[in-house]
Image 1 (tube, helix red, strand yellow):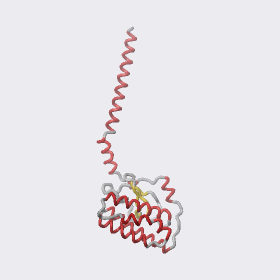
Image 2: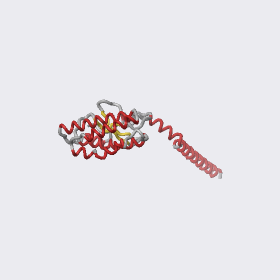
Image 3: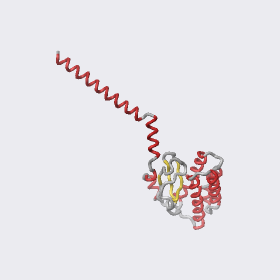
Length: 206
């Protein structure tokens, strides 16, 4: 009889300790997932240097894909377009509505001067979006339009052999891309996020 009582106590104690362990684990999970802790994680993430992130395998394959050759005159006009985009990229990075609108207009003019009809056709949609980048717009609206223009330019630099200076960059936080001159700026310059100026990574190696 005494053995049965002793065994019953052991079983009850084990159940008690098991219940305590479950409660402790549940409590820790709740604390970790609380809004305040999630916010802290986001703040810490923003302090990280995303410019050193590695390209994924898909982008590595894209970066070594053979690109089309352009005639000298056509290539020169496309390079002038990319140079104009550099100025727009800089205007977004240091953000000034007036400077952004002017640089967007200059880029549109550069696109119109492209000699290759195929490239010009690929950038037709971008010309309309550049007209929508205005000083009077809020930053978010201009960001969206610049992202769409950038996607077209990224396709151009991936498709045509324009050297190795211009590469595609990506911000995983905002899910937006842009073209940046890698030879002039080794560090990531995110044109979309003033609070995360170096968030993102180079995702091509052209």
